[in-house]
Length: 166
Image (cartoon, rainbow, N blue to C red; front, side, top):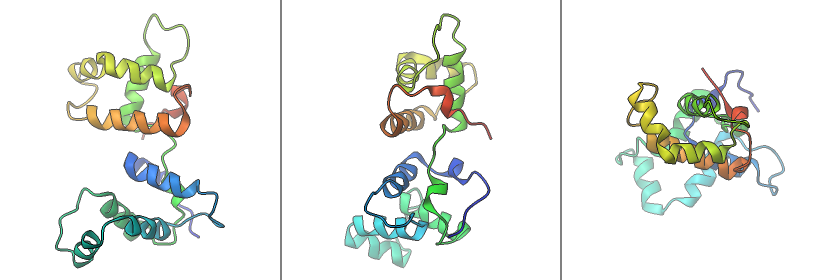
């Protein structure tokens, strides 16, 4: 099994990270899964015609989780440990959102992931886009990412524990 010294998880989508986390957390596995084992698991979940088309490379799935996983396998090898690609921190954009919530003047306690989500829903993303802190096309991705973090770590987790800047 190959360990990756760089922070490869920062390049993984929240969807693929959640899939990897589900495999890594599977109590029925004897050993930590590799990227190839995650790919096999994912391929087994997809409908037959999709897999056949994907194998023939005639089907445009460039934005799919499977393509993302294939790219990781190509770059890091099929025996790379999947856990190295599971996000345990926020993306840089979500880190900026968390930091904005942490820096609110009237905040008494450190914000939780739920508090960050509430601020996002209440218009924080729009404000940050207006200030040039975020790109205007990041809001949907950030909503998905915060929901994935809440699902994995709980709404009451301290948001600052997930800060990450590249």
